[in-house]
Image 1 (cartoon, protein in one colour):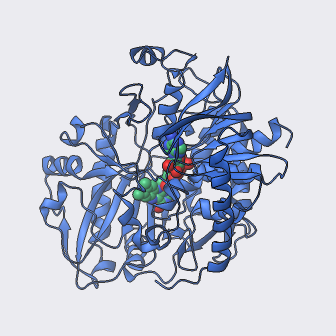
Image 2 (cartoon, protein in one colour; image 1 turned 180 degrees about the vertical axis):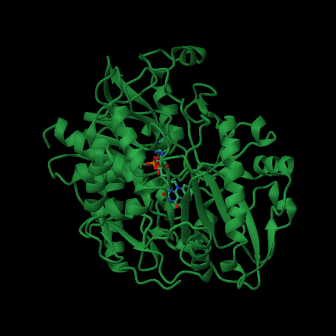
Length: 539
Ligand SMILES: Cc1cc2nc3c(=O)[nH]c(=O)nc-3n(C[C@H](O)[C@H](O)[C@H](O)COP(=O)(O)OP(=O)(O)OC[C@H]3O[C@@H](n4cnc5c(N)ncnc54)[C@H](O)[C@@H]3O)c2cc1C
């Protein structure tokens, strides 16, 4: 893929950023005002927004490494990061609802986090999602109208001007998929055949009503991935008040009484403490954040006592309410090889499993190559083909995350519990049927020879296929939810209940998974956290 990236500017920022690291590593206990843990989708936004004030000293700590790699920057290479050192490589527990299968749960590790390994789809969520979050939080600032303002402010939209929904002055370069593959256009044609409306963009009116189909909006700029780290932190990495520490794993939050005073970090085999003058922000993602909270004495009392961790604050919701989109890949054989373009996922569709619903509960992303599960691969994967990642946008099943033991180096036990709620199996049937109707529509006929997976199924075979095909959409969230009930972990300002100086700001705080891919909502979470921190500390 051709690159027109401003390489000299990049090299300059990288050089400055690297200059900070050795200096910092020699004095690991230097004070900072704010410590942001995790340089992923949300953490990148917070670090940049806080560091915009030159008087504020910000430390951004990331367990993984640099994002200077073709596998990150070339949009077509995203699948090569799965299972690499850029992936935490989590594995869920065997799930009886998926025929005992233990799903891989990739999560990004390194500058940019998920936004450096993901499929680059930019999806804002549905009006209903944000209005629900506002009612859970008891704060209208989380509602759709307020969030729409933030989206307009942070986007640098490169498609057809649409001032009602889109802004052009922000750091996040968003563009419609450029010169899309014919399969993406076929998907829009198939939608129209089935009476599903198509839109110029999925981020606007389409996500205020029953759904529709559109070409995907993407974080790709000049043929290169534009992660949220690249959008927010990279241009700021030469600032002397922002320190970026890579290869450093946060082990726990440190407290003086009930006030967070810093973090314990492991880097290059050394364990040391770093102090924060103002606050610590956990943005380590929906699996590592609840783990860190528990290791710091914040969580369900019984769980903590099971591992002999002194209880600082009993919060039974930590690690609960785990949600994720579950997907069932259906695959068609193509007449000839059609090379994927952009990230290989350029068309998206949202629709309802039942007409009486007031918002879409099904989510489809087209993938321009076959993506079977390890089970459905046995049904025969065509040499040239495409897959519809057909999934549940509003699953009812809830998972749970627990510590295996008190060792910060160990991954937690992830009971993702997909399809445990019978309503999800019902929705999954509608999802697979709609998916097959789309893929077998006239619009695809010029490109497709046959439906390869699953084909015609009776009711039992359909359920068996669903359980075999289910995989994660990689949208894990909800494990430290925002709200006001007993299971809530943070309030509307993302402050952790019962302690001072500690916030959670990442996908963990979502009360419910958004209707769509989750990185754009995580950028909003970062913006909201930064705004609250600035207001609280008068910055
Ligand atoms: C393969 C894949 C494809 C996806 N595709 C899309 C897509 O196309 N569109 C979309 O919108 N979403 C997509 N997602 C999901 C999206 O990327 C995530 O929802 C989003 O990145 C989550 O943001 P976050 O801030 O919660 O956490 P993350 O972005 O995961 O960031 C967490 C960061 O914290 C670091 N960290 C974790 N633990 C520690 C520790 N103890 N110490 C220091 N650092 C730590 C991690 O290394 C990581 O960099 C995809 C995800 C994956 C994995």
